[in-house]
Image (tube, rainbow, N blue to C red; front, side, top):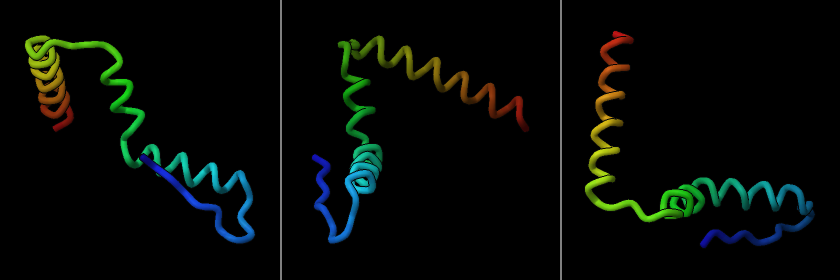
Length: 63
């Protein structure tokens, strides 16, 4: 869990900004979005394979 403490002479806006950065860096939101729906292991493998194929295609196309 990301938590921040209010520093002396710090505005609420900068506190909120630091909190948001911490949340993004910890990866909490991406984990929640990824686990929003159930994906079976076979489906996950299939998606990972497609991703790898696209990545290799792009890499070969750029070079």
